[in-house]
Length: 226
Image (cartoon, rainbow, N blue to C red; front, side, top):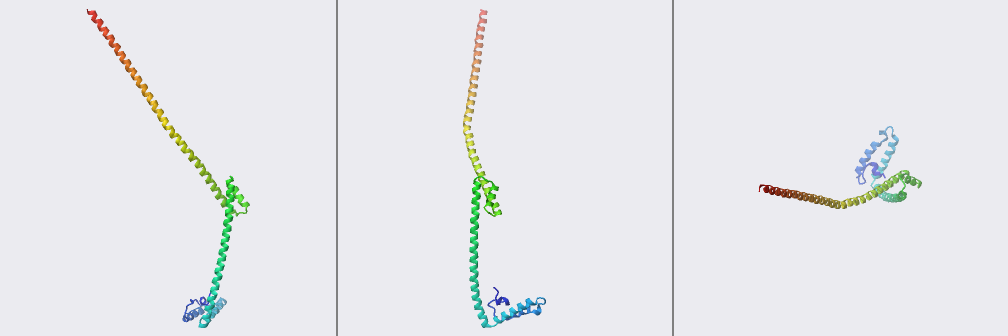
């Protein structure tokens, strides 16, 4: 909202001397004789400058103008505040309606996805409910990706449960295998010990037999001498 002060390019608290200097500078700039080729614009602007100076250079008129201007500014500010509040309320209502519609479309896509339908079916269903194509594609992609992630998570969970069971079975087999190995080793050691003992007895028997035959042979030779 332009004011007379804006027309002269001075602040509202400018002194009378500052207003006079500003008027002279602006009048020289916008005098029609100094703006050849755009005289009409210069003449209109020059007249505004003169009117502003006529009011602001008079103390009484300036006081009245400031009072009227202040009142107009208050009304203008109140009107702008009402307009901004109404605009904010309309935007909030539009956002709420948009979010509610989006939530309904997502819920619909989730229901069809839970029934096993793929992304293309979800997209078609949303279009059938007059959903915007761009939004329908976004929702269908997101819901399909979510369902795929859920299925992958469920599959990984099943695999993870089976793996500890297999590992436990392997560990439970280890002690039995170890015990069987120890038993086989003990049997082999016992068999080897019995075989060795038998060989020692056989060798001892052969030694005794040889010794007995030697003794008889010696007695026989001695008998020949007598």
